[in-house]
Length: 140
Image 1 (cartoon, rainbow, N blue to C red):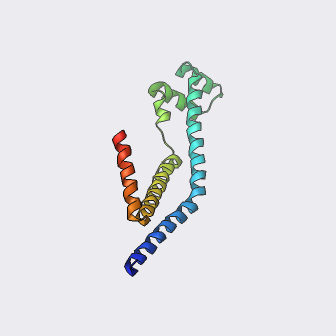
Image 2 (cartoon, helix red, strand yellow):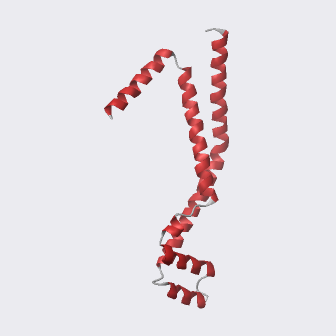
Image 3 (cartoon, rainbow, N blue to C red):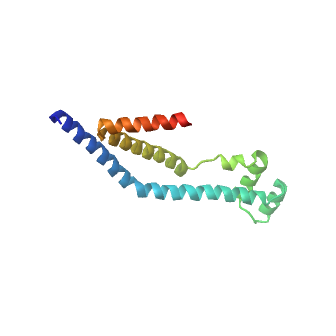
């Protein structure tokens, strides 16, 4: 192995380790963010279930008049009857959007790592893997 090849090899190893370090550092924050996003999804499902308990907007307004529900809950029921489940189901919280962004970033990092690890393989092994993938694509 020439000095240039050795340096390239070391640079690739550094790229792999750096990306693995980033993945380790963002793993716990990602899990916490995912938990928050899951709670938001559940809250939306609960809103839909709560809105379904009313047979009409008038019934919900009557309950609001008796202080049995909040004004926000009344608005949710009104929107539910106007727009259906989509008004709640299609809303997305900032945490859910952040999970998407971070998830895509994590996916790219993992893909980069696989690509760099592939580059470190001997040419014969790279070719064997390429042929394996080609064979799998032909079978589909």
